[in-house]
Length: 158
Image (cartoon, rainbow, N blue to C red):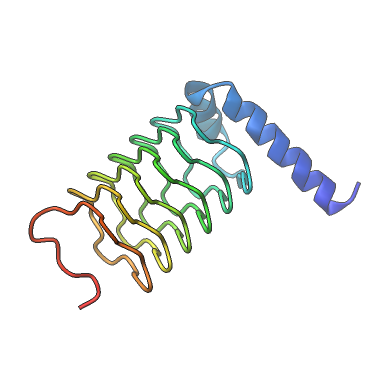
């Protein structure tokens, strides 16, 4: 078997485990913290993944649009070019996550933790940012059109 085939088999196994449910997945993750998870390009849209542990997971170019990721752990996850349009990320942990060019438009990001996250070229248009922690986050060409912000939200580009 070639290297690509092994990677595809591992990804299919990870998707199978994920489809068994969040409780099963989180237990498996706790028992196997050393395994690097690759869910890149996965179709995970419109599913309930609330409270899931996806720490350090590769979700680049995955489709998570409309998914419930409330209270999810996405710390240090690779979310490069990931579709999170209209996703619920309320209270999610996205510390040090890479969201380069991710689509977070119309997402519920209330009270989420984006400390030290990379939000370069990310689209946060019409997202709800109230109570969100962006301390140390990187913003460069980030789209914030019509984003709902808390009062006193500083201008990130000044």
